[in-house]
Image (tube, rainbow, N blue to C red; front, side, top):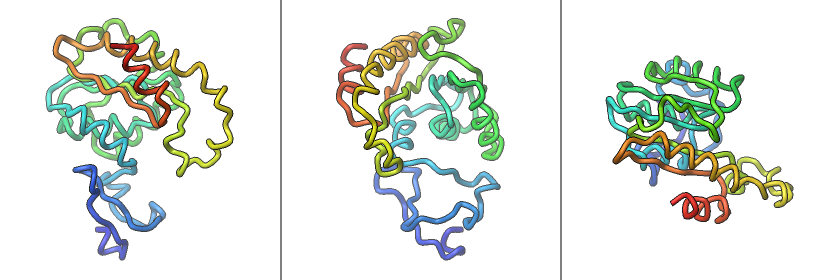
Length: 200
């Protein structure tokens, strides 16, 4: 489809399900988007779901899901079979997930508002896999969001505390033998390795 539209693209070197466009192209110039044949997601986000490795028929919980890319990747890996709960603190953003899931032909996703620090207690101990992609300072995506370089480091000082609280709740969803992937879009050790070490 990309070739037919004269768009230069190649398979991702890192993600087994990714296609990289070799130049910036407006979405409406590429066929297949409205048909749900593809969606936009950066490579690092694709790898989160790839590492999680969800299977058809499993129960997966995405704790901080909006705008939904990791939920979509997980649902596709699950062949749209099983249960996938997409939670987010901001109820008004859940429609983003619902609309895109419908466009992509994904029916397995159930959305609901939930504070990641509190969780949905009725699901504790029931999940095969959990995506714990926490709010972060975003220093790993400066290329896409250059304004981040002007943020004061002090503004992110409380984030590790919030991230740990979310991770401590997220791990409660797992059944014995379950798998959780903790991810951020920052490069700061205090929001990544330090939080995981504290959680363990």
